[in-house]
Amino acid sequence: QVQVVQSGGGLVQPGGSLRLSCTATGTFFDIVAVNWYRQAPGNQREFLAAFTRAGGQHYDDSVKGRFAISRDNAKNTFYLEMNRLTPDDTAVYYCKLNIQEGARRRTDYWGQGTQVTVSS
Image (cartoon, rainbow, N blue to C red):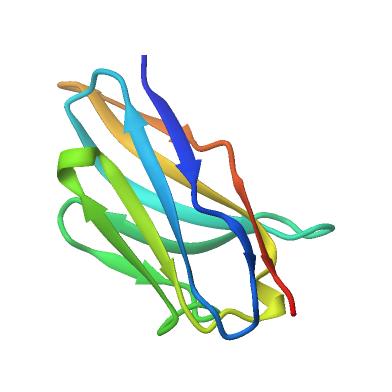
């Protein structure tokens, strides 16, 4: 059974950086794509960034140039590098992995979410 575990959130001062991790465990063929989202209190969950195994990347304008996705294939882990953080980046951050579990079966799995707080 596939599980997705997130880590790396916390408290950071404005202008600082954090790196979030999103790791898939279990038995599967490949991770097709990762999408990162965040949800601030009282707001809807919003899309931030996407990365596909074909190498495509897409970033929302709100984070373009500040956030970047990277991948460690050996660890089945994706990272979201976040730089120049502001209080507006405070939210719960979620990853969603699209995982190929069979020749014709792909499934989306969500991480549990991790809190990022930007404050002095």
